Image (spheres, protein in one colour):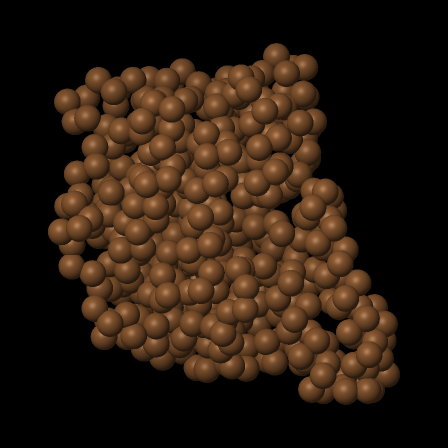
Length: 482
Ligand SMILES: [Fe+2]
């Protein structure tokens, strides 16, 4: 296994904030991160980063391979997306591909931010199957100079107010790792959201929950730990300090709450953590000054502990991250009947969380018992995402929006339109381009008189977006934020 110990680093975006400015600021303060994990960008941008920062090891945070989905290998864009991912891994000379165990598209429905998988045994089997397929592609085309291939690391995703499934989350990851030769990323903030948005927060203390979780989770496969900010979402009416436990969700621009550092201590102390290679503060979209402060504090408090944990793993009798799963070819692939069943489950999942159908089905039993989180997601979070996130409609289409208002058409009608029926994919996932495409269809249907106006605005947006992506303009790249 070719992942050597790295230490404490940062998980970053090329543009947001500007990576070179960040690295310079860190150097001015006497810091050189042990590694940088870089989020997906254009291949040109990643190649530039590799050349400009030759002295820091780089790793890759992928996006857009929806490995939770039973039909992803059938998608006309999947091979292309995997190919691009391998190219980007190679351009960074990354030791791993980190990818969330989450998706933004399922069964023909699209979302702007990550949605967690269905936590069921069948879903775990499908995830393992898809990971094995991606790992094979990396084995074939992703060899490093030392002859090893990059390793697939699966990250446990955050919960945004709800979770759905029939088995506990740690159990799900144990099933996946039993079937697939992958490592894992444990994100401390994501773990906090699991406590907050499952029944655990009413049953027990955070510390006991973390202890129980770590005993169940396949901690021996955790290669990297993430720690990032949490905050209340703009669409959430809750004020900070309101109530007992804040309704925080994953928020990389926000400060890292001190409770997460206490959780990190607890995780690092666990004896099963024998494969750890790296710990990163995930800081994309965060102000540079705050990143430097947080990194300085984290290094001071944790670097020795992280080194000790990595050494403990290397010295343990159990060779860290040994790929002990059954050989890929010996496994029975998931049958078509089961794939279809899971496809149906995901279609219902998308309709439930977008508020199109009532909550029903075995994987929703526990969620239904405490429906307030899901209600919050359906009625506030999803409409905000469609109307404002990753491109505010009123700013994207100022003239068309004025025309719609003149005809008494409310923009909120776009939300049910968006989720009205599943749609075949027409390109690799891109939420900004998808918004343009769907808004054009919406206006064509509900205000045909504004057709010329909306077409002109669509053309302008597409052109500006294509140009911005070519030159790597940070403002437009922001639209592609995670
Ligand atoms: Fe993360």
